[in-house]
Length: 531
Image 1 (cartoon, rainbow, N blue to C red):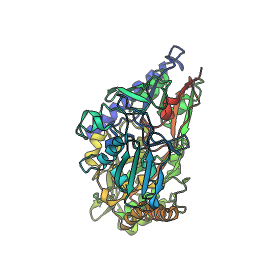
Image 2: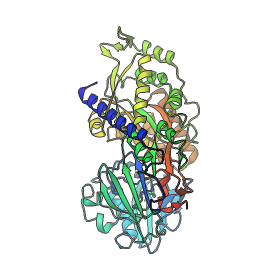
Image 3: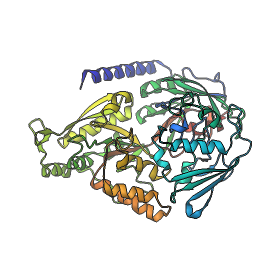
Image 4: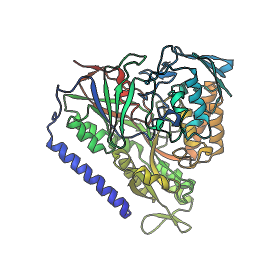
């Protein structure tokens, strides 16, 4: 481990120790009580958005707080109208989507919302000058047409089954965002939308504070002030929750379990498509070797990770699709088989050296594996993966760091990463696996290239026939079983510990992103005080 990483680990350990000491000294209900305003909520999240502009990707899966899309999701993840008055009228064999817009909607600055804003938003995202890493999800879109102020028509190049899901994308105001540099203008940090909340403060690395939009078309929220505290360290987040500083927080299983005897709080579990995986950079002579990839895929003990790391709050992952999804390809589950992993390496010429690490043609089977510092789940997955790999004779040297430290090394080093989207398999798999996106930021981080996978991903997105799509995605998953792009470890349930002063809280099936948009606060605008 380098001196830089040692300092990082030491700092993280010190912060955790201080947090746990403070927690031990605090009484279970210290800092809590009925004096808290019933119209104010403070919740702790682990990740901070890079931007608040939907033009750059913020809120693309919905629940952005500041904005609305044409459609949104209900608690069961069914599409329902938002800025549109109804679900779209789909014609021309699935190539034309017509939306009628809700009348009387205004942006929070008082400017009327019209079809011009919809056309502007989608056209700007598709502009090659716009730095939106998810624009490939709109590949099917040809043109957006304004029929009148309340009618918008989307023309597709080909039938694209999940297109309606993409219209949960937030709508930006043309009169503001259209007068700025889309990538660097003030709108990226000081947005204006039609949503239930208005951003009042964004203290980078600390918190985002929202106030209720009294003119919200859906009715003024009862929670008048909502604060999202950015607390990247899990231990510190638990401590602040225990002290009463937070009304709720996302926590890893072992920390959520420490609140089970707290009668004033309850834990809510959200099912997810959120996976943890290890990237296998093709440029690295070890992780780019197919035999090493196949061996690692068999050497990892996924069931042990679910039991030991997640305390059962999750399931083994064999790819981006959870095993209980109708999109999962039955029969692609991989057993934990250390003997088979060792056999694959032996036959490929990776021979065990005197230190227990294999080598081939002078190349040791050793590589660096990064994880995000302060993230206990990623740390524990990384360490468990390294332990399993070592049994097969492969050395994964675990390092921690911020994304600023990790990103420059992603081409050569492995990363304990995550992803997952419940809306449609295209949203996750295309960005994760298609070779055209190799090395495009956090898309296709392994720089994977498999022609069959590429062809099937394109075929699946260019039809609205469910059977054809299922066959294509089954083929993709079978290819991944034979030629792993990543080592998928677990699908993680999200656990939230929340103060009981709020009633009837719910969760949705969640994507990997579990910050502002997810958790029991996915619909904070509808929260009701318990008393």
